[in-house]
Amino acid sequence: MIEFRVLGHLQVLNAGNQLKLTGEMRCRLLAVLLSEANRPVRVDVLIDALWDGEPPRSARKGLQVYVHRLRRTVGLADRINYGSNSYSIWVETAELDAMRFTDLVRRARIAQRAGYLEEASGLYRAGLDLWRGPAYADIHSVITESHRLEELRLQAWEDCFDVELMLGRRDDMITELTMLIAEHPFRERLRAQLMAALYKAERQAEALKVFHETRTLFADEFGIAPGARLHALHSWIREAVSARAGQDLRCPSSLLGFVGRAEDLYWLSALLNHGDGSEPVNVEGPSSG
Image (cartoon, rainbow, N blue to C red; front, side, top):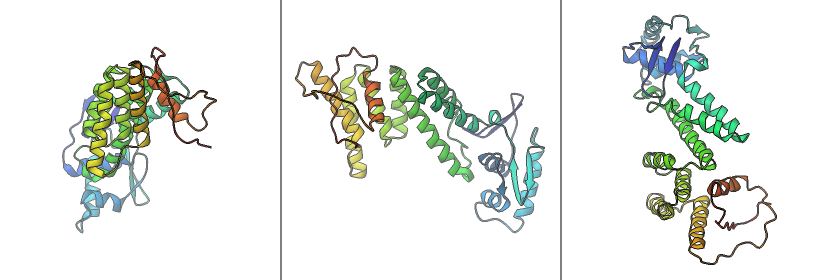
């Protein structure tokens, strides 16, 4: 079985053995074709990618030479096709790690929506474990696809953390969230998840510190305050800490239900899950209807 790996440095394996890919142009060509796997890529697009938008007059002939050399690589002879002034590479989902990742995340979200949280967590983790580094590392001709996959990776992490907060997990999450925030400091959802995980780990002071650090960072870098969700989470944690210290809190006298607040309820449930039931919840804000 042939396997293409692009979630990190470009690799091709045949029967588990890594093939030696020599030549920058050949690697670029394969990367561009894999970034559009099972879809035609026009000759002019390939030429621009190979020569950074400044092709020589012999570019078309040069492309044919590189395609011929790539086809000679073990297992690729009948996979690279030409038609309608375009080239394409045929791969199955199981053969390309980027496609496997996307499929695993899709299945995880289906399980999550159905309430199968353990299954969803396992699928998210299986997809994220496929990553070995930045997608298409060091191949700048597919930088747009690399950025797209990186955004999908971050969204998968965030969705995975939501699920695992609901499952009551926190210790490993705190380490993972801290590392991701160091790499992506302006991603507010990650910061909210770190606050929630710290709170559930009985590290309330650290959770509040995350908010204050975020507020300072956002003010210094962008001149803005954190969003409503982070403010609400900060207020909730402060009130919960105060309640545990024996201070009185004003809570709604009755609660008939929420309309249009599914996401807010999800977060509250994640915070309260596996608690002792003593935490008060004070929800403020305008109605949605």
